[in-house]
Image 1: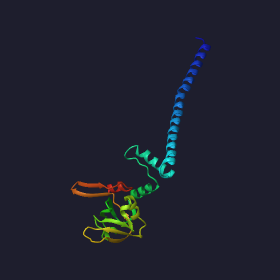
Image 2: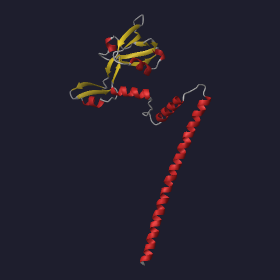
Image 3: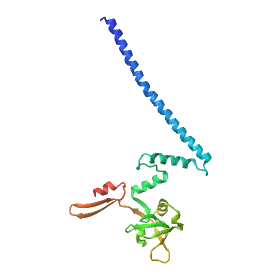
Image 4: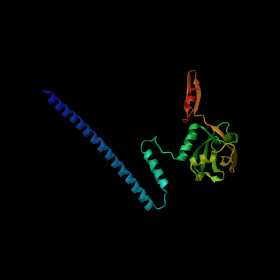
Length: 219
């Protein structure tokens, strides 16, 4: 085989490799374009539905509320543990994670007619004020507790240490509701509770995950 012919074959081989490279790239580029078109179609669908709500819904709804609702739905559709937090919810989550806030020192739950005291935390303002497990909060600073949600009640009762709040409570065995004034202080929630069951055996309970939960477990 002559040197000239070998050079021609090498050149043809190089051209074939380059052509294959171009052909291999083209499907990727087309795939990206198809994805972009699909994304655009979905955004168009979202925009059309949003516009229909604006025009046809019985009440006027703000764009912010619609978008916040869409974001919430998008993340909650992923799995049971994914959720969207707005500004207020994120702020609340950081407070809970830190495990320290200005408050009264009570564990509460929703109940018919108000908010039920599950338990006052030992040596907190609520405990010292005589709040008892089973008490029913019917008013918070004069606002009916039955008309607000549990998160809203928590927000009302938390606040700057040193400020006061008046709880109107119903206690079984009392003829009249009781008004209790409580001064907020810094509440530290222990996320790890422990008890020695027997030599070499301990019971550990994590009530919630906080910044220092790992450290407390080691202790």
